[in-house]
Image (spheres, rainbow, N blue to C red):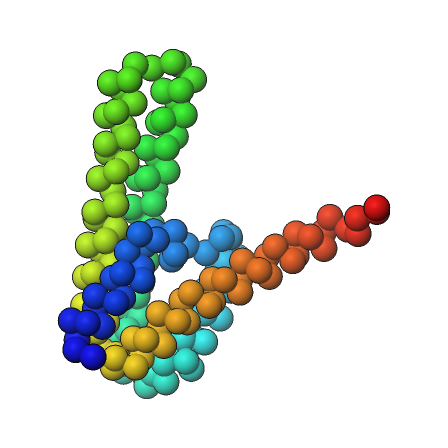
Amino acid sequence: MTRFGIMAMLVFAFGSRAMAQDELPMRGPGAERVEQYKKIRLMETLSLDEETSIRFFARYHRHREELRKLNMRRNSLIDELQTLRRREASDAEYKKVLEELRKLADPAVEIREQYFDEIGKILTPKQMAEYVIFERSFLQNLREIMRDMQRNRRGPRIR
């Protein structure tokens, strides 16, 4: 498969879920520990040596920060929509905010494409594939664990 084919596959795989996919479903010290664990697992999964690891994580952190800022802007616009709803705003006011919200999708895709171009210079195609698979699996597993923890906190259900 050509480099273009790999990039197209990655953009397709992540495109529409670019912002949501990278977010851990938690905050605080627990999130920091999970992030550290994730980095260690990534280094193991991708078999990164020290130099490659430093280069990869510099780009990884920059990418995460860009997406975090985009998510903050997105959340701000959604908050604005809630405010408009409470004060029964006009359709024109809604349209303006909704258009701004829609426009955030394009930068998310651009950020994702740029990120994959950058890490594509560091990782082999096989490592890129491992990375894509790792990201999806890691977040799915984390969400499942958190769901299980919530169920356990609620206690047994009496029928």
